[in-house]
Length: 303
Image 1: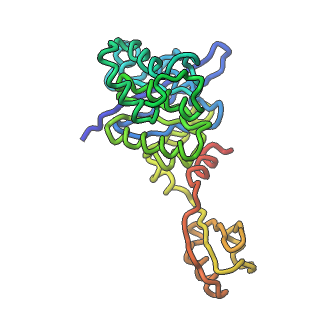
Image 2 (image 1 turned 90 degrees about the horizontal axis):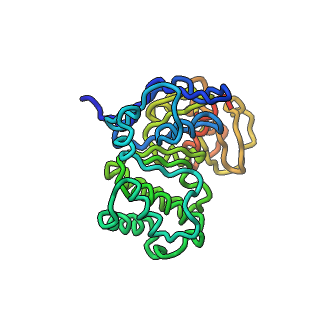
Image 3 (image 1 turned 90 degrees about the vertical axis):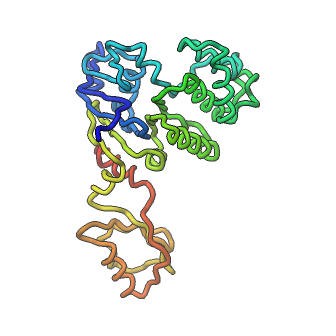
């Protein structure tokens, strides 16, 4: 069965007037309904890619199709498909929360009467309804982030782009935002996420593209890419502090009664367990160390 694509990028190139090649013929697709992470170090080309998709940056060459609308020939239609949450707050600090979201609908040709139910819907969903008459400058950083999301959703876009949406948001509010985004994705909205919190991408997203120096260096399902790693770090919790030397080949990192062991085809977890049992250590738990995507990311970008 042929998959339906929300975004198709083919041979996308962006060269700035300075001569810098920000994007070097990148190609990738995002399936409709996906939760997709676009990752990369600072200056890798993420923001340029997002800028091209959201019509803020003119590409040098290549093709971008949003839904079935070519950005070159049906730009107006393509824009209706997209909602963008940028990194920086870009609304009037003296404007009321409700007015900010309502005004955004007008940019898409939606009348206030039609837009008002959506304004209320998303302000309530994001916990901002009680603040609807407050000036935006009075909101906390987390509330401002949620206001940006409500504004991006008011015209019911098919594709939502989130550029560092949880930067500066405390842990509790961040997890609340995760649940909202998961439910939004379940409803059929395709989401593109850029983030420096790699555990966030690993938790939320199904597919990723890693960009480095304007080139896509890895692309595909997260599970498949992580499974391709030659080694993995697992945390083994013991009944007492380890003092032996027989685990040295696992390049262990010790923390009191636990040890992070790097296992591979040559140094398997079963062999490590056998060593510990022979040394009469009791194993209380074994679990993969969090941050596997971070490890994969660092190896992929040679950082």
